[in-house]
Length: 126
Picture 1: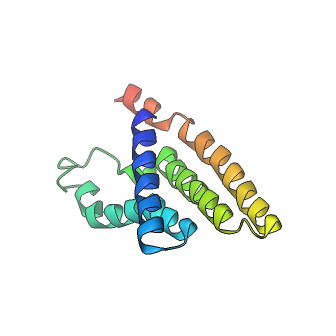
Picture 2: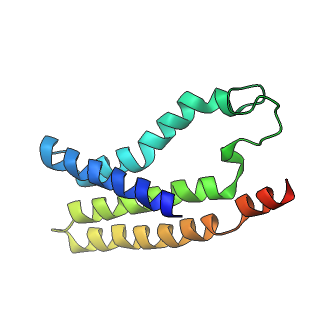
């Protein structure tokens, strides 16, 4: 969880930098760094995780996208980008409240998925 927090802080910092330097919407810059960047990395390295690939030569290791925690992390990342959209929508308080509700609900769901324990169970079974 500490590693995830470090990467989320780095992505948020980069999103803030893009927001202030290039005047991109904070919500879209956060979404790009929190969700888009990991998806691009997943697509680029997907063949390495398949059986016979660089990270899985014997084919016994399931790919990371087969775990709930992986998807929970993406839900959490998307929810945190909702905070950026809420900041962008501050003049419209109703829209801002809707985005914050999305961020809160998504964060709770993402954390619940991450803490579900599939990674730990898989490590114990091996």
